[in-house]
Image (cartoon, rainbow, N blue to C red; front, side, top):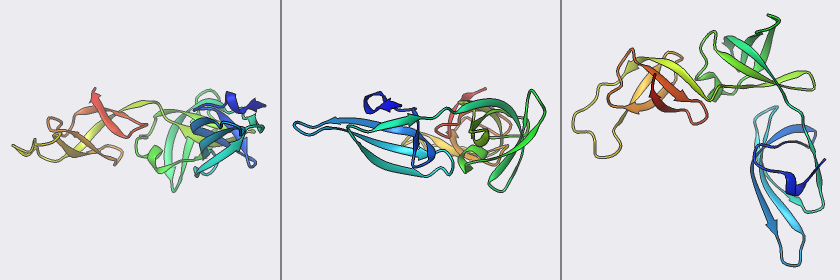
Length: 183
């Protein structure tokens, strides 16, 4: 059990019968009133994000999420099919659209499990992808940060600097979905 003072960003807690990831945690200490904890929580089962304020005397149950390495095989609807690297067992896992944008066949990911059930996909922080289509750079279009759209091999469209062209290998930050650097 966690006291409210021990809850921080990144903590995994059990809330209303489901595992949640703490996205924001703001500890409030009132003058004569008790302490409170304002949080933003993401449900790890369905991805819903909620704001909730806990009273100072509450205790929260910490959730144990296990991670296991797997290889991405293919996507079908809102689910992805993966193969565990050690046992070659194939499983299906729910995938957020933001995750599937940067997954190519054979990519290595970590699958999140809770109570022996695969509940999500954790991508590597950065992935290397090839540009399949890039808009031409327009000369003089540099009043602001000079960027253009580029389509990656997975179908994702990202903003890239003007010097990027078709066939370039780029490193993309999967957390922000933005261009990081050339490979």
